[in-house]
Each structure stands twice: as C-alpha cells, then as structure tokens.
Length: 92
Image 1 (cartoon, rainbow, N blue to C red):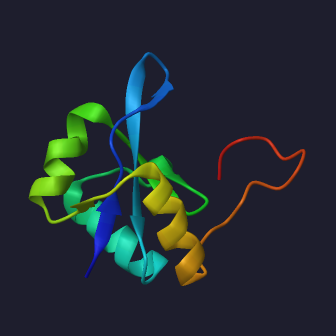
Image 2: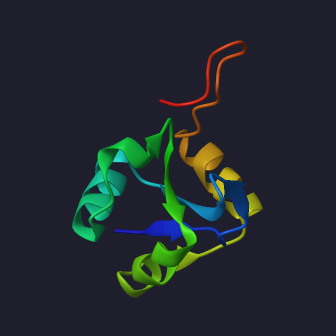
C-alpha cells in the first residue's frame, strides 16, 4: 500500500491543508483514511483534504511525503485524476 501526501500549503477555512492520495486505487486510499480516522466528508473527487495538524499523523502511518506537483503527476499517471467539471460547484 502506497499513499502519498503533499505539504500543508493549501489555504482554506483559516488553516493550511494537504492532499492525501493513492497511486493504486481509491479503495486503498479510503482504507488508509479510515484507519487514520479521516472523515469521509474530507474526500474530494480524487483525494482527501487533510488539515496541517494531521500531517504528522499521516506520515507516521506510512504516507510518503511528496511535492504538490508530484501528487498531480502520480494521480494522472495512475489514471485516478478526476478534474472538476467546468461550471460545477467545488466539492465531491
């Protein structure tokens, strides 16, 4: 199981966020997130949004630290990238 996380540099709701992804499957990602105690509502299209205070927890649980650019490359290469459709509201 390989799950990746980028640095918490994405601002929103008064805090910084990371993206938690898998390059194998959404099932793998959901299982990792569940074991970490991440609520299902944190899943957005192809990743989980994780607040900065949870970053160390994800790394301790085995998530590999990569750049934000690498997150996009890994998702795209695995065929798991889900882009927001034009005009669609943010979210799931």
